[in-house]
Amino acid sequence: MTKPGACLAAALFCAVVAAQEVPTRDVIVSVVGADGKPVPDLRPDEFQVFVDDRRIPVVSVTRSDVPLSMAAVIDMSGSSRLAQSRFADERSESVVDGVLKDATAADTARLARVGGMDLFISPPLPLRTQPFTTRISEAHDCPVSSSPIWDAVAAAVHALTGDPHRRLVVLATDGRATATTLSVADAAHYALQMQTAVSVIDVGVSLTIPQWNGEVAVIERAKALRWLAATTGGAYIPDGPALRVRAAVDSYPLVRRAIAARRHAYSVTLRLPAGAGNALSVIVTRPETTVLAPSLLDAPPVELSASLLARVGDWEKCK
Image 1 (spheres, rainbow, N blue to C red):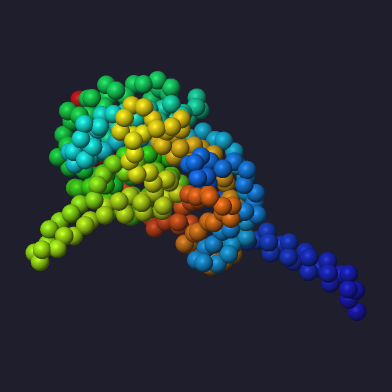
Image 2: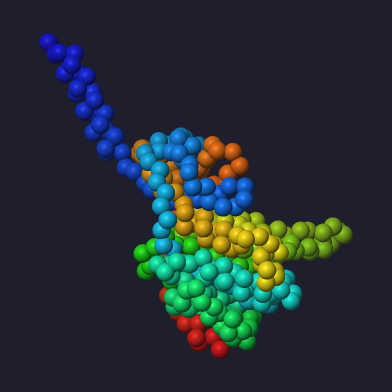
């Protein structure tokens, strides 16, 4: 006859072994408050995680300030500059300044450019200085015949893959992509593969196209930009006064908010049972908070072609 205590011990042992056999997965989750600043004091019980609408156990939640590898991708195509009128130069410098001035000594920062078929990406640049004014002026003289936005995003993500830090691409664009070999889905899925968030500064406007029957079709190109940010766990930031003039509207510029959200993000460890699914949703129960998290656990594989990578050149050649 088996003793009751032995049965209980065996059941507990099996439960522990079963729990150890279930794989875990870390997900980077940024949480910001109503003021756009990171929320620093969330408890593990305030996180709810769902995969394919199924509640997934949260093993642990940790938060630490970590170095970042960043790339500021600036759209200098003709359509983007036209949308911004005389504010284009100031906006470009504001975006880049936001990246540099919030950087720490352990961070790395690059600058990439959209406009023309060649994709120019700088090497890591000095931090807490302003080396970009001349570089931006140089870029204005480069060809702007096309706007391969999604190619440029993927190339910037690729440039960051050798860096050991948490990765972030900040894209400033009007969203009008032309002559691009990749789709926005390709760019987002490649960023997910490389564990890189893409935050978007949207500087564009909606397009109105007259129809034959007298009606007007409105093309909301912002939907693609919102989707790119939401899918990769980045922030979507509509262009505002802080990006159009030298003086910021408050003491915490919008671009720096996107960077701070990524730097001060939480690492949420999940226990994923077999067949858990792929569509990820993270909810934080504290009121007046916004969650920035990837929408997929695993992205469809995307491989950058040799011809696309061959178009990537050093920023200094853009003169």
